[in-house]
Length: 614
Image (cartoon, rainbow, N blue to C red; front, top):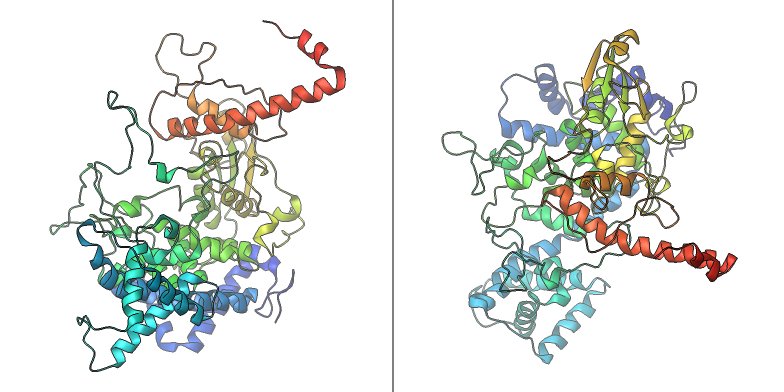
């Protein structure tokens, strides 16, 4: 049954129903009935678990149970939105790349890398190149990396199928020898840096986590990044477009799926033999994900080609996952089982899973549904209707909006206020008291380049304090998802304690006030003349840059900066200020020039210059 803007793939339900707690309850019962009919044994085990979720349950068995049920949730959701075909395309594309990861381990790592022991460098011959090019051409695909992997796997299969072959023998086919040398010659070749089959984890030195160069031997404190990692910055579009799907899959294949042995330290923390939390060389306690997200289980489902099921697992503990992941948090990576080499890049995988789902038709709606309705979350499988209690949430940054989400799901009426001005989203997308939200078929409908995106004010520090290395369209997704909740209202430009005194909150009928205001204002340091002309607080600079849209080509803000500039501090805010200042300065100069030329063309250059002082 084709899904339209009103009818869903499960008979009897429409898009409007997905925002109604009573209908979500009915949809949950429909799901339970379906699983019970399709897999009675699994349902009996799940039903026992959902009725007593706090009862002792072997961790490995629980992981396997969640993975098995996630597949049913995925199938139901895909049927609901009629996305079986595009979802199957993702699964097919995932399986089509299996050869890459087999070749990487069984051929490149075990056959080619030994030729480079001791720092040796190898160059392939013209003959080797010709042989490999012929192998690539024979595979009949424009994907050269995949062609190499398939050709290599065919050689491995031929070796395995020949009972007379000896894996340690030096007697090989000419193709085999040429491919081994060709691969060894390209492991460290910059031209092949993008090929995941030649990308292996480096060892980690905890006291040299960031590679630097020191250009002045007389000034040891002066540091610059390695020349090979220089990335040019021009303007304020997204500077880190995240890993491509193949790179994400490479990270998943690198993961050893520790949940199968209850060793998933990324989620549960790293512990010694006595059960104590391990402290690493930098003095950081390795406690794993603070949300206890089902990380290894997510990897298992995505490795199998099911991003919808993987996202459902994520949403059990982290329904606000657009606000986490790549460039936001990495506690999971710190606690990865790989402590002496580069850890699995779990945040990239989480964001990759979300991106895969958003790329599906109705992907925005699928994500939104999983925040309100998720059978895997046995403690709250669907949002409850209004219970008559009201909560005022002060601050709509990550803490405030996450708290608001959980409160609304529990049936509370919530009003969120923030000191920043929050731009309203189109009423057609959020819905009104009388009209339901218009469903969004394509993520591209609300996706914008960052230098064109409206600065919404929603998200607090996520909006003004995190720069263009992070895709703030995810913040728009969160804003939209919460703005659609019927039990939630959000207001910007409201200062708690000023616009709304605490006493007024009780008079307005609130039963509770939750303070989630974060930093609230720039830190004023105790230093003489620290607010004179030419000095600005770093956090204040970022707020002025991001929230006024100063970086936009057609904006006319009052934010002026001159170089050279000194940034005092080395934390996140300081580094953001340094990078954004360098990017803003040329934009500011170009905008000033455009304005000058426009005025000169209209009234003449002499009249423009007469207004200048020395």
